[in-house]
Amino acid sequence: MLTVTVTETVRETDAVKVFRLARSDGVALAPYPAGAHIDVTGPTGITRPYSLCGPPDDTGSYTIAVKREEKSRGGSQALHDKVEPGTELTIGEPRQLFGIAPIAAEHHLVGAGIGITPLLAMAYELHRLGAEFRLHYVARSRDEAAFAGLLENSAFADRVDFHFGRGRETVARELAGELAELPADAHVYTCGPQGFMEQVAVLATRAVPADQVHSELFQAGEQPDAAPCEIFEVELDTGEVYTVPPGKSIADVLEENGVPLDTSCREGICGTCVLRVIEGEPDHRDHCLSAKEKAAGDQIAACVSRSRSPRLVVELW
Ligand code: FES
Image (cartoon, rainbow, N blue to C red; front, side, top):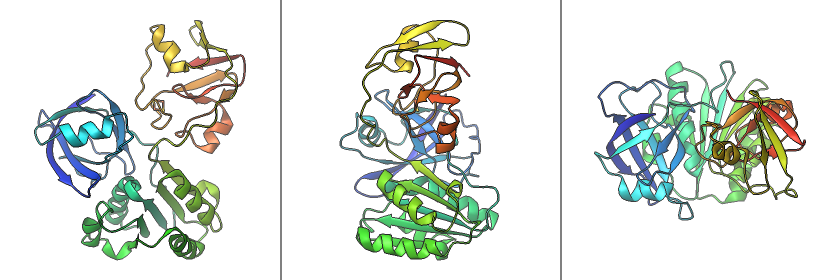
């Protein structure tokens, strides 16, 4: 964890505020891969993951954009209301669960709303690399579109397609037309509400294989209806066995028993709590593991996922 100072805040839209963070000790920050996020602990002690959305090679500051969520448990509201230039915050190291494919004929970035943030960092990086890319940005209106002015005046403005205020069906038609033309070795990256990303994935996979479509869930979606609450055991690779009752997560039980486990979002988004599964069948309820990783069954997000077998044997990383 690192202590940083807020050097600047900018109100991008009525709901989105941008924060620039620099190390409080004046040392340069670590560079990060485009698409990475950091955990930010706000003034109320709530930790949330936020995508880094500045140029990834800028080691002078990290930039995050925070949408004020009226239904949040206080994380975004506290950042909006209580944080100003000079405030110190605690952040984690950049972590990457969503990144640019090293080899692709073209890259297509498709974002909606606050989902623009990781894609903005990717656009900076693809432009720096001289790669072939387009950024498709969907928002209800230009006034509600964070970074619209920055993108219009960016060095890669000619690569940005704005889909503002067009309505759902028109946007779907526009994206269908653009994604239908992709070469088979293009990669597509999407971030936004879950339904939007699912729609982009359906459209993109008409032209490219599914493993070339990359999604980042920006907010926790609805959890699937809970299966009948089963009791199961979790066994550590060191031999201790604990019972996980209905209504408690593996992470809850390990913490209650003094087993050290890093967690952040506790909503299955960030991947901080992922453990290796040695034996047993996980019941995946997270949004951070890919479909391929879930099918492999050798990892589990301990904060939300459960078990389909009576015992899960896990290894603490
Ligand atoms: S703590 Fe974020 S996925 Fe579990």
